[in-house]
Image (cartoon, rainbow, N blue to C red; front, side):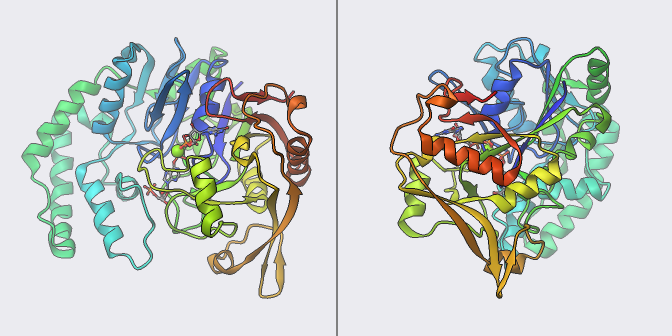
Length: 423
Ligand code: GDP
Ligand code: IMO
Ligand code: MG
């Protein structure tokens, strides 16, 4: 069974926790897009791991973890992550495979990410990890890939070409001194040495594994509404975060994908700028942010919080082909008198039942809510669906009815044990 796990909102839905749980039953775990902008949290006993580039299944012995061609790799960040896991006793050389075709992030991408944000009227609020500029180079056919690191002559020429053009832009547009070739070249040849044991033809490796009847889990990063095409553009990331991205980002054909599982929080969060129709205001915003520890796993920025939005989830189900949802952080809603779910948007006297394409509508629309009663109990120790408070079960049932999709897992805390499976 080859399964894609995808974020159904604006990222940080708890994908890391779900991937870690599902990894126990798979053979390969593959990241297919994004880069170190992602922060996927896995809590095991008292230890918290935050994965940025390495698949969240790495803690399960014997599983092969792959970074596909669709991922942008910051080698410095990757090597730091590898070293950290090695110090926890994980044999990374045996377990991690990096695609030769992945594009590399250079310091000039990160600085450009920062400088561009500084100049924009409407800032995106990026993670400043160089993601956008690196994907731009990929599409512009001047990117440098992992494979290039292992051919010093080719790497030298490509880096020289890039610096020639980019240094002009840095100087003339941004009044920045630019980057010196020799030190950057040496730095990256050092990374080549450190990464040589990991580089592989990941597409071939995965296809062979699938032929051998192995199971593959595709780990989406970011979320549906940060997708470059279907997200709230331009307030999005620069990759295909929807499930379709797993094929182009790994080299596995769509005919081998068996199932797509969406991950959604029981409310909504967003980090960075952009429209957010159900966003809370005032003290309630602060209350939920603190209760849900809603601070970015990568940048530490406070996440914006709001009610669950069924227009978004319906759109995510449609775009990704989601047949099952994992609903996370339901415990954060403990103790609320009532809980709201957006079921439509009203704008200029018109009701929208589908997530609109026009950002103007999203920015100005007023959500129409369905309001249900909350529960007083602390649900984080609940192990079985039937032991959840009646109102929590009603909330889950109502969601299933609105979305017409099965909720197969409910997460009630950050650890592996705080998970309810619904058969
Ligand atoms: P990801 O990017 O989708 O992997 O999500 P993040 O790791 O960025 O953010 C999710 C946060 O919520 C992490 O701190 C998790 O440890 C935490 N978390 C995940 N599931 C639950 C849950 O059911 N309840 C609570 N309270 N926290 C959770
Ligand atoms: P995970 O995988 C939440 C957001 C940034 C910004 C926008 C563009 O942990 O869910 P970028 O640096 O990608 O150019 O920033 O996308 N963003 C995320 N928000 N979770 C993420 O990843 C994100 N990755 C990027 O905050 O709004
Ligand atoms: Mg995250």
